[in-house]
Length: 496
Image 1 (cartoon, rainbow, N blue to C red):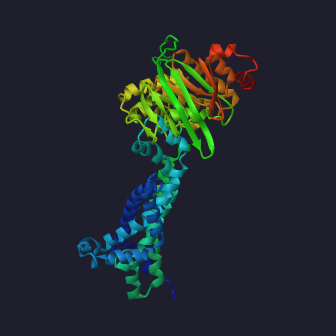
Image 2: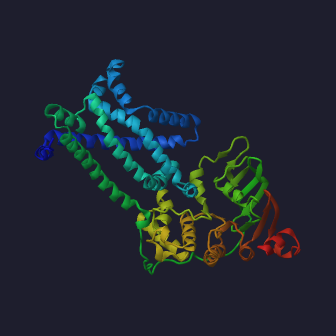
Image 3: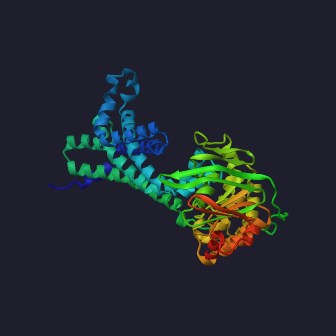
């Protein structure tokens, strides 16, 4: 038996094949796009805090990943026998096939999205929370761009699967590529030649999409995103206006009998603490003493089991009964600037966009004003020349200084520092501490969790020491200096 090359080449111009190819491409793209959107929503539902929502998502994924597509196609196409009102839609093979494919593929695409969502560091959620970004804005601007970048190769692979699965739609008489081929070789018996042509058209659809996908992957690849140093404009203000360093009697933050347990471990045991306006309070103590838990409760990055927290004299966080936040939490949380030990910069944004994101999200000014203000904050921390770079181009110390500038851009009343130097190499610690000291000189209210004892001695108005979830010492700088050299707090500071 000879292979008929002339017949094969003639199929390159066969109109029915091109119409079927366009149909397959359109069916595949629609299934992929709709399934990708629905799959993302299902992935979010899979991670919901609401049990019924999680149960629905898990059940959907389990059911439709278990059900063969062929069975689903036949069921959907024949559904009008039981529900005649659906006949205008489901009696059309294209729409019946699209609906069945979307129902099935959404379950697979949801798990791909879930993998992408899980890959996004928890610090990204916390940074968004600290900037007062609501859930929709958080997922739109921060989480989704990063999750899609991780999930994109698998999402593209699923499109290829969808294109191949369109061949099953021939069972409900949709004239896709395989059915056109079958009709041909049943007439002329040139099975091999016809199937080679069928394969070519499927490969064509996949290749065109693959080219588009590879370009999109390159565009979203953070490692390829680079920015050069710039010369900061001459009119950029490099320091905040000088203010008198004064601690007032006004209490801006108050923790009242706060308790937090993690299983059998009591992280905070009946902690009460007040911070006055303009005061710099350093929280020290051994590892596991509750320092980080304490500072994270202030802006609700960590919930509490008992007690209450007051901000600027108003209700803020309470666990007297059920845990609850103030009704205007997302608006007032911007009064608290938060700097994390792991920086938590947004990797897909430039340094400048990181700093302008919060004010822009909250509509705090026009683009030019926000950019000028952000450049001023970056200049203040010595990072204006790096405004166009991405976080992966910076050293640890540079990242932390950008993180400070991002917090300052929200014009906070209080700055919270959670071990701001713990993730830095020793030679980079000094540049970050200098920035924090300059904020102290400018009168910024600050609560600092740190293990840099010499820094604590230089900058603190008060030092609070914690052990096993308890505040074991709370002294002003004067009281600390006058305390016995063998006191627990002095010994701890000398060891540090």
